[in-house]
Each structure stands twice: as structure tokens, then as C-alpha cells.
Image 1: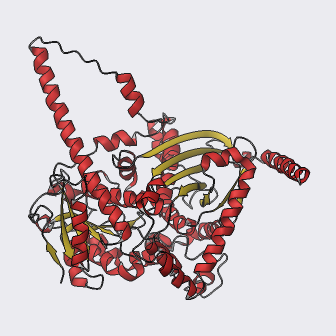
Image 2: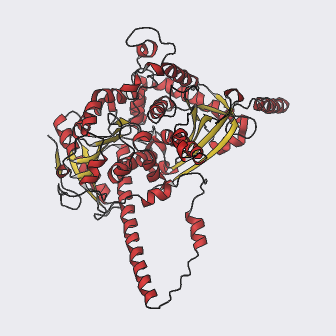
Image 3: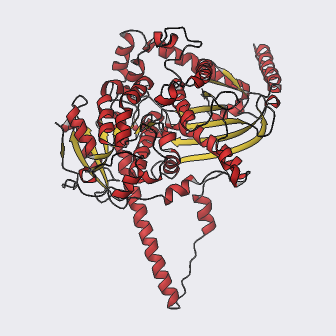
Length: 607
């Protein structure tokens, strides 16, 4: 059976204490889905439990939570100070005392206000004004080895950002195979943040415990098949308890999922502004026929991620043949059903079969090098397949179904998703134009060689264990140099225009993160997802029918607000909308041929 031990300040949190957010028991109860049972608040001793807290990524998660708690406490103190100053100023004014303010507000505004497109929701301001914590965040470090957990605790309490007034930390011993300990762990916490992978090996009992006790759950898995199985097995119990089970909260797949969500949201809001109040519902149902993400990033990979990737099972029979009828599929699945993560009540709806196989075909085509006309004002750029696109596509498709990006009842082409990689970065790729084929081809060949080597039986695993064994990863100085830049476009047929005119409205969203994607960006995304469930639960979208869902579906604007308003690591967001733009710009091909011909001629002359 698991057990918890004292917090860093020497006193265990009182079971009846309130959460770190300023929320009452009634607030929590009303935010649960209709008909769900209400948790006994007196049994909740901690806000966030990090399971697998001794792992490599977990270290960055815990560091982020400590820094975030400290920043929130500092912001609350500053707000209280400003409030006191305002009171003093009012008293001085009443006494007839004139105070001179020589602050250069124009300079302050220029320094602190990021560039923002006018039609973009003010996520940063919304995040700053959202319900802020009024008490210390309670954090629990959970895992099977108490001595290692205490080592992590000691390191956290020695951080310069640590303050016992802003965060209280304790430990809880629980093994991934100890069902009773995991239930006790989940019963005492608001949110379980799971970093212990491979999740198909260590995550199932954790999800079961959260689903049955009503604890919310987030993780950093990229294992689509496992996540789909969890929804099938534990959806009923999560629906009864009111738990929110949100997987894929790391670099796979929050940047892709939220970038597409932001692009769709900006497009729909632009249409809403142009319509009368009676037509707002119609604008909100704007049908999206395609979304596309271009990634550029720099960073390393940790041992646990690589070990999970090379050990993901490949069921060729499931890819090729229908499980129920045994017939050959019209289009083979790429690893899993494109709708693997969709709610069971919609997943097998025969109306979406045409959409399903168009989505599967797009996933296969997405594995090729492509010519893109969207990124350059003339000619075209070249992009490579993104190595995480196979996973991310399933999450975006699940969000598309849940958030009604597309409905099979509408007479428009089915929604498809593309995910691309720009090895030279977005801005340099635009400058290189068609010459971006050089980095795209080089990256693709290198990735194919590495993948083939790691897939060699025995040899691949031995190589991973030798170079980056589980529990290790890139050093901190490399992590700090990393970045992630995600640019998404969502297309919708232009209103009032015939389909054969090739005119679309484009909504775009660009998200830029600081730090190594697999470590620092992952830590930030999953930490903010957990904090949203703790501090902002009453502001979240409605829960799903079975408690399971994607980050965009169950966290949505609240998570975006927290990310762009983070005081720990800056995240920037830019959105635009272009109306009645031509979808295909075939004349660009002529420019591409001309540029390629000129380069080829120059090379031949040189040689």
C-alpha cells in the first residue's frame, strides 16, 4: 500500500485544506459534468501529483511547477502592493497632496506588449486576469523508490525559485503495479500528472485509478493505440466520477493541437464578427476542409522517449484488414485508425467512413516530401514529413470530430490534416524558396537512416541503451538553446462562393516556444495543463461524454491563455485571417521550374 510523507516545510498538508486556487467545494462540484458524482473534498490533500517523479522529463516538470508557483505568488504579492498603493494614492488625493509620476508609460508599453494581430483573442490578458492562486500549491512526488523521491525533493527545495510560502511538497510511494496504492494516490489529489513511460507498460493502472476516483489526469504519452484502449476500457467509470482524462499533453501533441485550434478559432471568430446575432451559430459551425502544420525546432531526445518510440508495436493485420469483417481496407491505416481517439459513440458511425479513409490517405501522402505554395509569396517551398506527424494527426482528427471542424452532414469535402517539417526553420525556408529542397532532402535521408538503424532487432535497443539509456537526456545547456516554432493554417470554403472557384478563407496561427521541445516545452505544456485543471477548472470547456478528450477539446482557450501568459517560459502566439484567397496557385510551378533551371545552369557552368 502506498504512503505519503512530510512536506518540505516539515508539516503534512491538512486533508481539509483548500486547493491552491481560490475555489470553493461548490465551484468544483458545479464544474463536473452533469450527473457525475462529487468528490469528497476532505480527502484531497494535494493539488498535483507527479507520478514517475524521478524520471528525466519529470525533473523539468517539477522545476517548472516550482518556478510557476513562485511567479504566481510574486504576482499576487505585487497585485496586493499595487492595491495598497492605490489606496494610499486615493488618501493622498483626498488630503490635497499631489504626487508626481514620472514613469515613461510609452516605453513600458513598447517593452511589455507583444506584437498582436487585431482579430486575435487576447489570450495573454485573459491568462493574467484568470483566477489566480491564493494559497501555496501543493505538490506530491510519487514513484516506487522513496529514497530517490527524497533526492528529488531535496533538489527542488534547494532551487532559488523555491519558497515554502508558494509551494508545499511531499512524497508518496506507489508502484505502477500496486492498484491499491495508486487508488489511494489518486483519491488524495486533484490532478495526476503522469510522466512514467512507456505508458502501455506503466500507465494503465494509473488511468484506471483516476477514472474510478474522479481525479483529473494528464500525461506526456505519444502512444495512440494505448490511449485509445484506455478510453474504451475506462470511459464509463470516468463519466461516472467526473474525471477529465487528457493524454498527449507534451510536445506531442499540444503544439499541433492548439495551433490548429487557434487557426480554426480565428477563422470562425472573423466570420462571426461579420454576421448578425441570429447567424452566430452558423458562423461557429464554419466547416474546415483542411488544416496543415509546419514545424521547425531544435533540441535533443531523451532515453525514455527513444525507448518508447522503438518499442511501439506495429499491428500489420489491423492496418490492412477490418477487425470486424476481415475485409481488406480501402486504404490501409498508418499504424492506427485516424479516428482511434474519437469518442466510441462517434468512432464507428458509418457516416464518417468516407472521411476516415480520406484522412488515412492524407496520412500516407504526408510521409512524402512535398512542394508547398502557402509559405512563400512567389514560387514554392519544400518540406519534409514530421517525425511525430503519425501521432499528432490522430489527436487533431479527434479534436476535429469533437469540436465540429467538419461534419459529414455538410456537402463539403472531408477534413484532412497535414503535418510538415522545415529543417531550415520557417523564416529561412521562406527565404530559400525552392532551394529549401536541400535541407528537406538531407533531413529526410538522415531520419530514414536513423530510424532503420534503431529498428534493427537487438542492435537498435543496444545502441539506445549505450548512447541514451532511459532516465538520461540532453544536458541543460543544450535544452536552453532549443526552441519550437509551429505555424498552422486552416482552410474553409469562402462563404457565398461556388466550390469550383477555388476560393478559400485561411485562418493561421503561429505558436513559438522557448527551450528543447522534448524536455522543456513538454514540461511547460503538461505543467500548464495540470495547473489549468487545478486553478481554472470552472473556466474550462464542458467535459466530454466519457471524460476522455484531447487538449484542445477539454482545455482549449484556458490552456492557450496560461501558455501565452506564462512568467516562466515565454510563448508567443500570432493569428491572421485571409478571406477569398485562391487555394491552389498553379502559376507558382512555373516560378519553381525557372529557379531550379537557373540554379542547375549555374552549377553546370561552375563545374
